[in-house]
Length: 189
Image 1 (cartoon, rainbow, N blue to C red):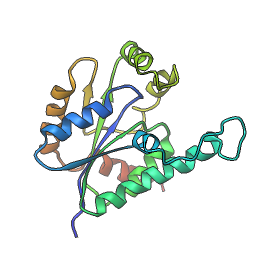
Image 2: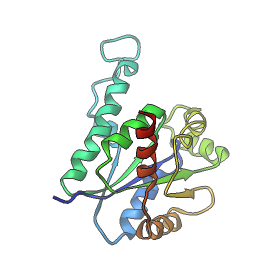
Image 3: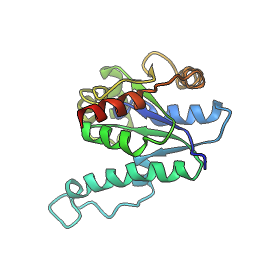
């Protein structure tokens, strides 16, 4: 059985990951699904958020929500679908979980950078994000391990960054960033 390949885009909120994922889909010569946690929210899969202490407080649901999101990725890829995943990896535990869950898959890990000034401008323009969220993410998302490729959405438009990622993905080498992280986690265990 063959598995789908995964391009995992990691960066702060408002860095342009979803737009970049769509640009990659338009340019790449293989079919790729675009998967993000925002799609789960937009599809209204979550129960109503009752942040004022109700039964479904987001603070209580959030860890389970992301465990489910992470676990859906190998399920889709194991059905032979290629994926472009856009994600904000906020915690070392999430990185370790993803590395473990995706150990059997061809994962190309991409860091999506953007200047703080541009992140904050985009965050305000979007109107659907908590102001300051991108700043908080920027402090942690790029601290968990190496990347196979890095792009900066401040410096280049999505189509150019997509071309850069596709070119790097086509020339990817072993060991990948995920394989290096797997080895590091094994040594620590």
